[in-house]
Length: 355
Image 1 (spheres, rainbow, N blue to C red):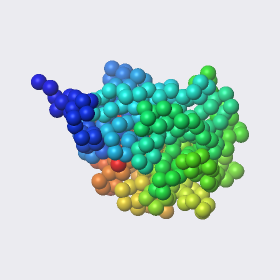
Image 2 (image 1 turned 135 degrees about the vertical axis):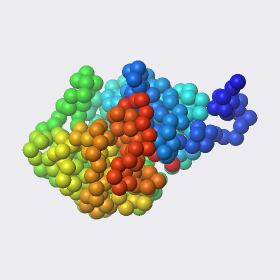
Image 3 (image 1 turned 180 degrees about the vertical axis):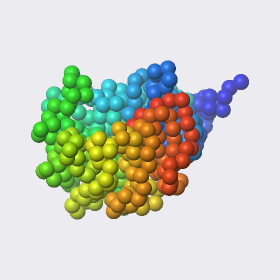
Image 4 (image 1 turned 90 degrees about the vertical axis):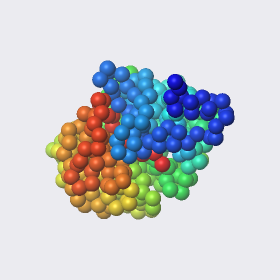
């Protein structure tokens, strides 16, 4: 007997059904990549309560994903230095398109759709020149590559679309890498991370950097609040005896503001993910190396600390936050950490909200 999912996939392929939406994929709240007990990798769709809605194989370790704003399509990205980005139909589980960067470049693990879903933007490294670029793909035309624009720095990692729908905000980590050197960081003494605001037509609108003394504070992951405030999670590349604040916030036209959470050494100078709560009143950051997550108010004052082994993924939840761990746990972070679900997998770095 055909499954409901298979029946829907057949209707969609035949063109007899209305245009598919995320409801046809089970109305997932989140996307997350994971490693399975077999050693294989997959992209999961999770419900708001952390339940498994779908599981789609990946050819290698995933990092983050980009969710189409209207259709049940996800772009799964390989971990940096990434050599695959797969456009996946989350109803049928089929790979619609494999995206390949031009020779001499690779993906950095993140991407984002335009507000109308017509364009996909991806962070990339031109490793022969060391230049960071943003790849542009036509999501309405078979994901043909339209070109690339400068990211405004070196090592662009995460990017997000600003609320105006016309500007990208990009965390340029400042770290130069080359595939032949694996994950070796090539320019630590001279690295210069920044947060860049770039219009979708390629113009750099604004840039901010950490203070000179903190030029090794690699700006890696970002979250965007509805009013345009940015939260930035950093990864310190200097000596552990001198770890600076790792959480920063920024509003365009203002100074970059760093916040000391008192856990910087506990997490070995490394924040894995960052998110605003649904209300925008709180910020959560995760430190997987120390098994610590911290929830702060919107001004960067610590409210509570959660301790959970290998905690890394975080996204807004119905109340507060939802976290994922490398031990397969899905947790709620409202007040003390509480279990939502546990799966037989190791969740990777990010929990990506849909919608």
